[in-house]
Amino acid sequence: MKTPHTREKLTQDFTDLGIQKGDTLFIHSSFKSLGPVEDGASTVIAALETAVGAEGLILMPTFSLLPSREERVAAWDVNKTPSTVGWLTEFFRQMSDTHRSDHYSHAIAARGREAKAFVSDHRRREGCQSPWDHYPWGKTYGTHSPMFRAYKANAKLLMLGVDYETSTYIHLVEVVHWNKRLADDPEAEYIRLKRPELGEYWERLGQLKQGKVGDSVCRLFHIETYVDSLLAEVERNPEPYVV
Image 1 (cartoon, rainbow, N blue to C red):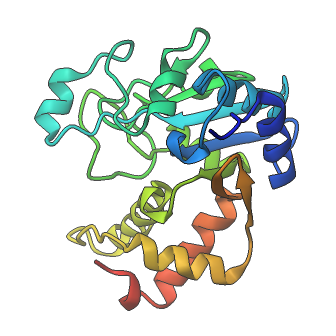
Image 2 (tube, rainbow, N blue to C red):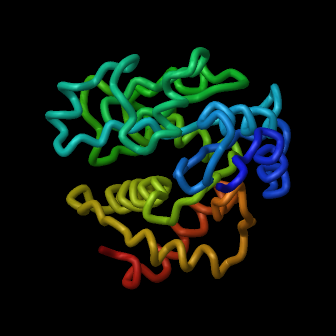
Image 3 (tube, helix red, strand yellow):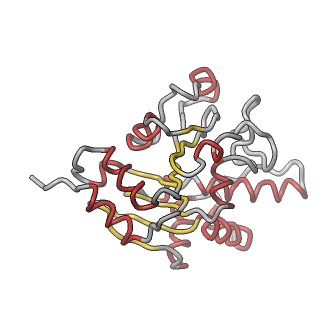
């Protein structure tokens, strides 16, 4: 039986990948991809917290992606509704001193430096509109949403054992693209983009780091560069990427 990965080993792996003290880090994750971990999910979170240090901030999606909007709205309780996007995110959500944004479907959880403030304004309604906006909640990807704030804060995206199908930041590309088009044509339709194809384009640009954390194949890169690069490519050459 394989020896479980320890906190020390995972911390070193995260650091070797390029995570630094003081980072704001948004994480998409597959817990099972790590292989055996000593003491489970708590060890992974502890290793991440050690890697970013006391001045760092860890963000995870804690989305409630029930089949319909009506089901999501009816089930929503910011303190109780489970995350449906992986065990690590659900464990993270339930930890003491984790703060969660108030959004019926696209809530973000945070731990670390000024975590509560970072996720506290998801009911505000400034910024880009999206198909997931639903009163009384705020703009899903608006100016004060945690994902937009991470984009503007030079945060890094860690893809821990997952591929680009999980990359929710491609929704931000879609949203910004749509809102630019709406400015010229109020009837412009929302366009969904092909995540794997955009992921292949992004990897060809080479502006990311890749490595192993435990047994997981991981990618690490800056969110702002990622979003802006994909947006420019979609605006220049939309056909290969439109669903």
